[in-house]
Length: 129
Image (tube, rainbow, N blue to C red; front, side, top):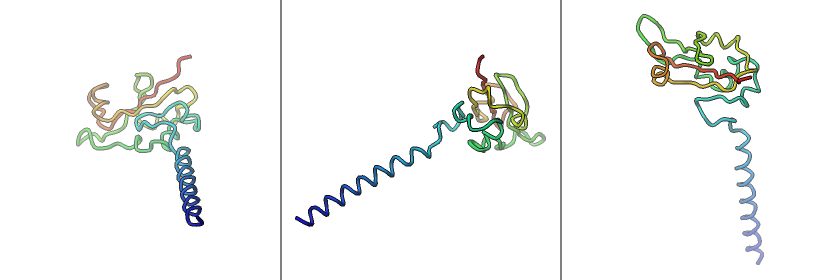
């Protein structure tokens, strides 16, 4: 009788601990599950777009590969479809009116914007007012 109570208590304790462990991980997950998008909710923590990307998706800021031997690749930044320039433009871009930021890899960026986007594109969509 004593052994069955201990076994039952041990089983209940194991279930309780596993349930606690499962719920604590949920708070550590990022708000967005997409690797290619930063949402408005995620941007609320930062005031400058560059800082937000640096803390949430730092790999977006680094070029991967080369477009040509003579010209080094760079990640281009677009805002509502208009080209702003390189990633340094993000340092002067406020997150206040940004709805979302998306990253397009080389293939998707070249298909959408044409040649010269071999390092990818960071596309900013602003909120309509």
